[in-house]
Length: 232
Ligand code: PRP
Image (tube, rainbow, N blue to C red; front, top):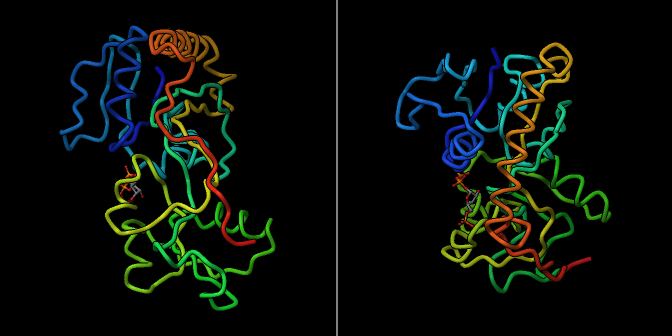
């Protein structure tokens, strides 16, 4: 029996669709249910529904053998998991943004304030550039922070860009691209090698078929052009 951690939210419909296309029909798993665990005897799998930021933790510590999670979460957490598959869906980017018209250095104090739910990614990004920042960790609605003067900039996930636009924010730089990844617990890969390798093979084939259908080799919907960096 394999245990797979999934998260409610943006990725779950595409994740379930991928399993279906790979030949695993998961009867009874409903995104609307309050149930957090679904046993699928016909597939010899158990699905856990956890917070997306907890998926790497469940997988790293063996609460689940495998999971599906965004690369953004993996980059932030630096979990020790095996990452055999880029699933292609859930394409988005982690970007630096500011209020329109406030994207220049001279309007900022020496230490700029960054609101984000990605403190590690932000810290690495600014450290590499030698820019002193104060990082304010938030858990959601990041776009509000510059609007109410809590921060000078934000580092946040951008998918369509509509949340930025709705708050008169402009993207200054794309820090990283993200798509959903299939991750595997390192010990499970040895102990449950056969079913895991079979699952990886089938998922990989389903991803390839989808890419072939979409015609361009990638399912990325995110804009990939790099934005101009406005400050050093
Ligand atoms: C994410 C992200 C942005 C928004 C981006 O938030 O933090 O706020 O989606 O999407 P868009 O570019 O398509 O507008 P989420 O919906 O996960 O909620 P949160 O603010 O509670 O983190």
